Length: 162
Image 1 (cartoon, one colour):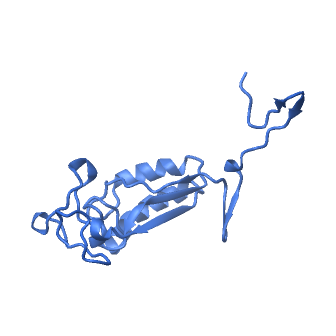
Image 2 (cartoon, rainbow, N blue to C red; image 1 turned 90 degrees about the vertical axis):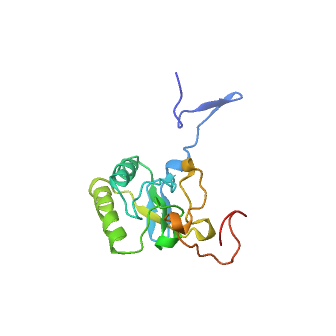
């Protein structure tokens, strides 16, 4: 019969109680206390349309909100349209992208007490690329891509435009 985490275990001739893992204990984080130390990491979903959240985000993040984790972090969310990795990246840079996220967060808050964090992002020189399963190559401006903005003029790959 399998033992639980709190079941005693034998150590030589004596029985030693097993300590509970800290993973499931509350975790204070400044003014917020997470119910446990399980954090759902940001995951690029490449499921947005012009930076806007879609029904996919409602289903994906909504189901993760019910997981029992201590914190849910949204995928990397671009702070400007030109900061997206690909045209399918999530953004939060205008009224339309803000409005598209509102029903997702409203549904999460209606059905779960999980705190939600956001990973703000800017792709820099890695922006304006196809989604990974289409090769991830840079999309030229003439084909719907955009000029990238980065701290230097160096490109991500030698074949790319700065």
